Length: 96
Image (cartoon, rainbow, N blue to C red; front, top):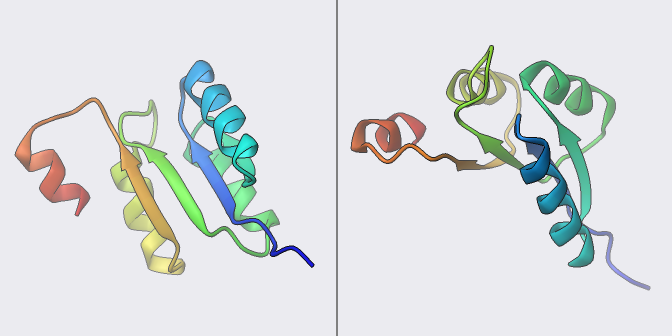
């Protein structure tokens, strides 16, 4: 019997990045869900029993990734990997 694959939610407003991550992660055996923004991510999280990891873009239009992360932490204890083009120390500190 094989172990169930980890469930990963990719939240990124860039269609190409979402698609690329889906291809690579699926090839590696992960169950991948996609969301283009925080609202779509909430719908996925509400409809799934478990998400093991959220790969989260910080710089999204509307509700940014940092705000979404803070709100997600209020209700769920899920692993979050934040990705961003930002490189300032203050951005890293806020993310942590």
